Length: 100
Image (cartoon, rainbow, N blue to C red; front, side, top):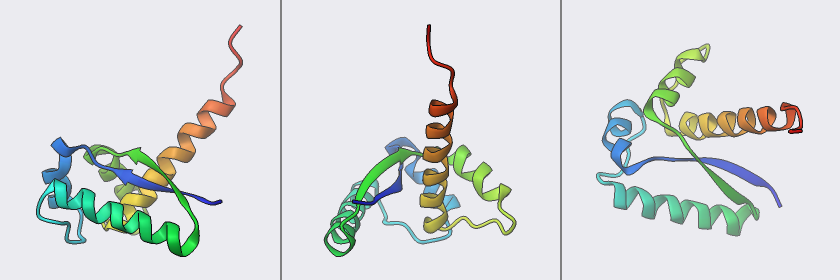
């Protein structure tokens, strides 16, 4: 089974994300959660994937987007940012020396 990484947004940051993400987001956080859950369920049924939610802050997203050759503040980039963060954290975990 494949794992896909998706962005988890803190409720306190939702209004900020609504301002910086170029893709139109639902009007409120509760609706965002419902839409997100429907998307995950559909992807699971269609592609058999499981999801790992990665919390992304507005600052992390901004830094990620600005580092791209062509800055992209879309919802797709938000999930790509989550994937990049997950991969970086996993790499750091496996590269860390064993504890004595």
